[in-house]
Image (cartoon, rainbow, N blue to C red; front, side, top):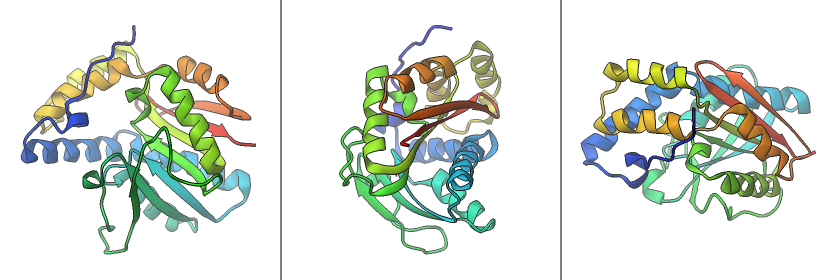
Length: 227
C-alpha cells in the first residue's frame, strides 16, 4: 500500500472542545487496548535490562497529555523500575502539569526537531504516534536530535502501514466516539511507514545500531542505540 499524506484534524485542534476531548479519549483507549502502552513498555524494559539499570530518565516528545509514558511509568514501578518522565510538546496547552495522583510532572514546550536540552540530558528520548507525522528526512533529523539529547537510545512507537491494518481500522469505526478520530484513524494508517522504511531511515541516522520489531495489532517499536 502506497504511503499517502492526509492531514489529521487533531493536529490543528480542528474541532470544538468537546470533539477534541472525545478524540483524545479515543486515543487513550487505542493506546491502552491496542498496543500503544505495551509497545513503549516493552522497549523501555528492553533498554533497562540491557543496561542493567533500575532508574531511567525519559523525555517523551510530542507528548500531549502524556498518557502513554505516565502509564508505562506506573506499570514499571510495580516491577521495580523507576522511570523519571519529562513531557515535551509544541504547545504548553497540550501538556498536563500533574499526574492523576497529584504527582508533579516535568513539562516543556519545544520543537521536536530542535530539542531545547543539552547533550546527554536524558537516558532515553521517546515518541508515540508521532513519527508518521514526519517526512523521511524529518524522521532522520528527529532521530539524530534525540541521539544528541539522550545517553542510551531513542525509542519510536508507531503504526505499521498495511492494507489489512487499514481494513481493521475501518471495521473498528463504531468503537470511536469522536468525529475527529473517524477521520484521523485511517489517515494515520495511510501516512504511516513500514518496518522496512523505518529501518532505512535508521540506517541514514547516526544510530550506532538499531532494531525495528513488530508489536500487537500493527505497531512497531524501533530502538536507535547511541552506543
